[in-house]
Length: 185
Image 1 (cartoon, rainbow, N blue to C red):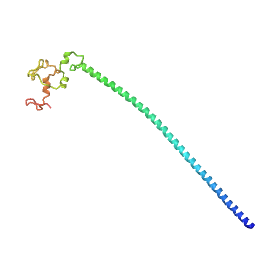
Image 2 (image 1 turned 45 degrees about the horizontal axis):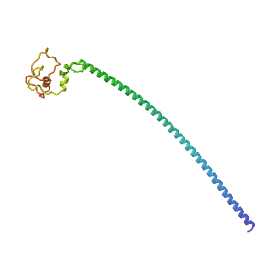
Image 3 (image 1 turned 180 degrees about the vertical axis):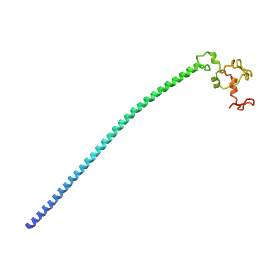
Image 4 (image 1 turned 120 degrees about the vertical axis):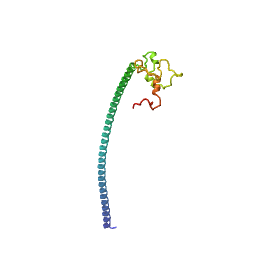
């Protein structure tokens, strides 16, 4: 080999090495630029994620505040319901007290304060509540009861006095009035 060939081979090797070096440098620069771009994208994504996290945090805080507000509202409604319940109880007890006083004043109502004789006397309410079982077995009125169909003057008969005969007459199933008495509509 002569020196010209040797120099040509050395120059060829140097050129190839230079080309390889330039290619490696360009490749590294591209890689660094790509890494910079990737890092910038990652930073932007992290900022977006941070913003999303803050928004979610704000929504969670708002939801917590709404929940506390709802709890306060529920407690207020509970207190209002209790107040209304107590008011209803007061009204109910007042009404029951008024009914008790009315029962004490009403001579037709048997209360524990009346004597035993009045407890045995039938009242309109007790006669309406009890089914009519009929009169005496013998067909004659019991002692103290007027004869059915007999007229009693207004002075002798108290309008509150009701006999079983009177209630038996009102409980008849005959809906047609007698021919001699017109039916009031």
